[in-house]
Image 1 (tube, helix red, strand yellow):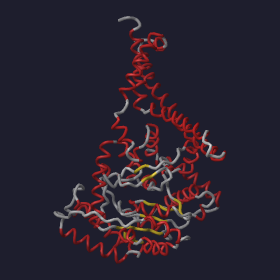
Image 2 (tube, one colour):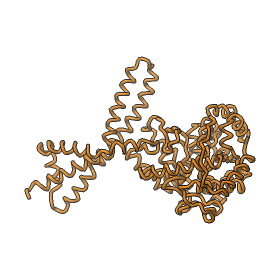
Image 3 (cartoon, one colour):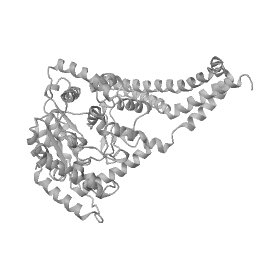
Image 4 (spheres, one colour):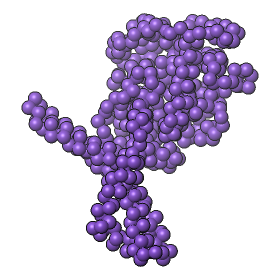
Length: 496
């Protein structure tokens, strides 16, 4: 073997792996984004239609975006180079070749000439297929680069540690604002696809309320600390369709349901089985205090200087397992539960389950993301709630059938109606869409909103959509009858 061959092989390994990682980590795309951002900044400065203040604001936003891109690019390049060099260094420790000699060979002109060509070929071959890149950008929740994904995985695995940090943040905020307890919170909960997001969006428009947004991700349990850390490189809000494929656009400032991450940190053992249970009604005092402190942090972040007069609003589908607990922990809370016509609702649930089975099979990170934020509603993450033991008695156990979701609907709303009727405010989704002014006026009165007129006006764009016909041939007739009877009871008890 020629004396220089091991050194050439080592240097070649470094350049090949570096080129492959450069492509797989999307660093070429990030570098391209830096160029695009730079050109956009120049266009802003040359725009005669903008005054100096507008240009300054635009340049500050561009500087934050550029800082974030440079951070990702620098960290990515360092990681892509460090990995192959570390592997070669480890091999060199066996005495097969000198690491210093490998570096010396890699800097020679013959190697650089050959290496550049090899590097370009490897980088091109290592790029993800166009279909995969399009797939990754198809939903807002999928639109994360490698560094973002790494941060999310880190956040999802450090819930207990974040709670410890949050305790100090809570104490400092309470001392500063002189308030220890939040104003009466608002909890919106139901089975998914019941119209919870529609209601949350309307409440989030009111200055009275504060909600989680995507900017709180991924370190949701320490929102104040994360806001300070990430503030220097947060991106401009750009809305995209969410992964549900239902036409709803979300962006970094959109309200969303991340509260389940707190509950998971409180009791991770309750999520370990293939199905979920209804929680006990009692919440330990320490957890109640931490949740109250978290509400104050969100209120201060969304309404700086007004946390003491702001109400925390939460949309969390899995709070249907904690109605009794929430009522005990926050006796002054409002708990709003929307519902839909059962067959339509069950069909929507089935469609989303099928949709997320496809999404999760295509992109494992999306499955990790959804589980990490506590969404066990659909797809490979599905963990149905065993309301009153219905999963032990039902014969409809296949989630790829309409019968399963209709039986789930009956079990869920029977439990809510019979166990918690006195503590929940029921809102019929079809009635809301057909006559938003009437329903929202009644709801505003129930909730004693500070500005009911603004809330009612926010429903002006709610449209009465014609429900698609769902074939019920082959569906269990007894199940259809039970669902129809329960729906009539819900309508009779609903806010109108």
